Image (cartoon, rainbow, N blue to C red; front, top):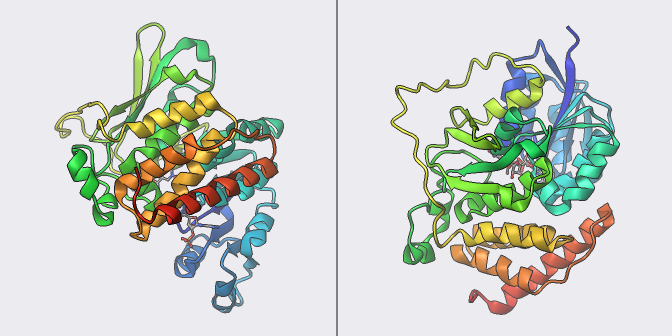
Amino acid sequence: MKKEVLSILGSTGSIGNNTVDVVSNNLNKFSVYGLTAKNNINLLLKQSHLVKPKAVAIQNKKKYKVLKKELFGKKIKIFVGDDGILELTNKKVDIVVASIVGLAGLKPTINSISNCSKLCLANKECLVSSGKFFLDTVNKHNCKLLPLDSEHNAIFQLYDYEDPSIIESITLTASGGPFRNYNLNDLKKANLKQALNHPNWKMGKKITIDSATLMNKAFEIIEAYYLFNLDIDKINVVIHPESIIHSMVNFIDGSTAAILSDHDMRIPISYALNWPTRTNNHNVKKIDLIKLKGLSFEKPNEFLKVSLKMAKYVLCKGGSYPLIMNASNEVAVKYFLNNKIKFLDIIKIVEYILKNSKKKKINTLDDVYGADIDARDQTEKYILKNNGTFK
Ligand SMILES: NC(=O)c1ccc[n+]([C@@H]2O[C@H](COP(=O)([O-])OP(=O)(O)OC[C@H]3O[C@@H](n4cnc5c(N)ncnc54)[C@H](OP(=O)(O)O)[C@@H]3O)[C@@H](O)[C@H]2O)c1
């Protein structure tokens, strides 16, 4: 059997490392061309030992010397910097896993589209910031787009972008994050340690904070809107604290289909890598219905659902609005991670920036970066000017 060749962008992150795990257990099916990281050379070296890539890229130029020394004699090409990551994606491969966090992932992911036949997309910021432009590029190059986000992956498993007219609606499930039951007073006092303590999933810091604010679910609404070509009103969210049902499709005939599995990202990753077939996933826990205590569903937290409303607001507004939401959120999360603002400030800041922004067209990569820089500048200025007091 011919092996499929893949590159993993952001291999040292939570998604990337889970992908390396799936691939390393299936080296009879996959071979790795490229791995990329920003700083974490220790993990990059460990992964290189495991899956023997032909090339690696390190974004932080200061790490190059050490990496070069460690990889001496291994016949692994080393690329460096943002340009280096882009260069790595020039190589034609079968599959690219796009799992760099944030807008930093956009350029390498866009570049990959013309150089692979299957794009496994974890980086939700690509679709959020440049949805239509991104999908047009995917379609232009006839690349198959497979969502890795567990919710969209579940929906994709039930409905492969066929005919949207058979869909009444979709229901994205959300764990509710660490603050699911918090009242307003508790939320006002919520600290970084609590926000990083996700009840079900082990993820990178940025997405963990986004889960706590429900911004992650808001971005998933935007992702689903673009991926599945559905009206905004057909995308619902329900809190499902057990994270066993990963999302549901409600068909027009009254049937609802759901995908159930343990909360382990190696399951959607394995599905996407192996699509259109499936393979044994020996290392993951299979669900046992008798042992499951129950599956419960709730409405989103009253004080956090403003994030979900924002998703619908920016989609209605269109143009650069979703991008502005993403950019201002990335900046606000950065400040929260540095203990410079309070938890609820993240939402207040994004709301303020959206209310005070003007719509721009997003038709090219330059449009994306122009609007992104403006939104980030505006957010930084607002945060610094208000010195920790946000209405
Ligand atoms: N984690 C999940 O379960 C999950 C689920 C669904 C969707 N997603 C999405 O998947 C993406 C990755 O999430 P994650 O949780 O895996 O993030 P993460 O653990 O923070 O990993 C991010 C990866 O991107 C690299 N990176 C960071 N900044 C970079 C830059 N400026 N240039 C190049 N590479 C850079 C990191 O390298 P270093 O390690 O060297 O810093 C790391 O390899 C996000 O868009 C997230 O929303 C994640």
